[in-house]
Amino acid sequence: MSTTIEVDLKDVLAKLDQKLDRIEQKFDHKFDRMEQKFDALTKDVADIKTEVKVLQERQNAGQNALEKRLDNLGFWLRSVGAGIVLSILAIGLKVFGITGIN
Image (cartoon, rainbow, N blue to C red; front, side, top):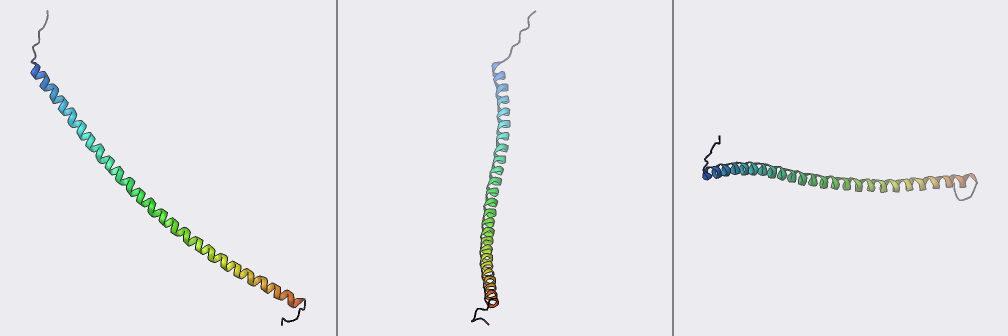
């Protein structure tokens, strides 16, 4: 008992062509979504780079201000230190009775 199936090659090719078209549409849709996600990621990376640049500029400005404050503090400490040393020297000279200081 054998069964004979007659299929028109034209119909098979049409069905195959329809399936390939659906696969291509799905691929195109997924590819478009991937492109959109990639574009969004690219934009996010660019935004992060900008934020990093701004933060670096702020850090540099803060570091420069801190260095300036430390320089000023050093100047004041040297001035106060010199005044203390001169005061101690003057007191020592007066205690030991060196003339010329009242």
